Image (cartoon, rainbow, N blue to C red; front, side, top):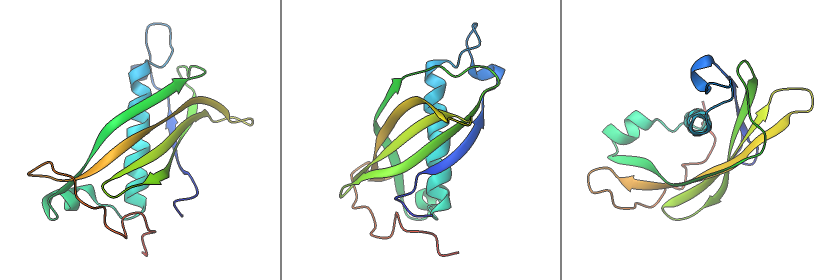
Amino acid sequence: MTTTEPFELPVRVYYEDTDAQGVVYYANYFCFMERARTEWLEAMGVDHITMMNEDNRILVVTEAHAKFLIPARLGDSLIVTASLSRLGRATFEIEQNIFRDSIERELLIRGGVTAAYLTADTMKPKRIPRTFFEEDPS
């Protein structure tokens, strides 16, 4: 995997994800995107627990956006993607999309987040390590 290829996480829509009409509640799309970001970073070797407990560093979302194109419904199988779109000194942007997992792979949500790399105890920005977005060699 490289940072130019979007990471993909399959997600199934459960009853708990929907409103009374069986449509995914809007805030739950952000939960799906968070899961994909976490799995993507861990697939590249970023261990959030070690980063926080041993390195005294954390990642925080500073901005999130979504364009809701087509609703997902109870029972749908989705594909949630994550890919690096911009890397700054202490922040980075992640493009995220949610598709209905079907033959035509219908785009449901177009979105993303900006995240900051901080020192945990002071909450001050820290330069992102050069190797942060490289493949995990294992």
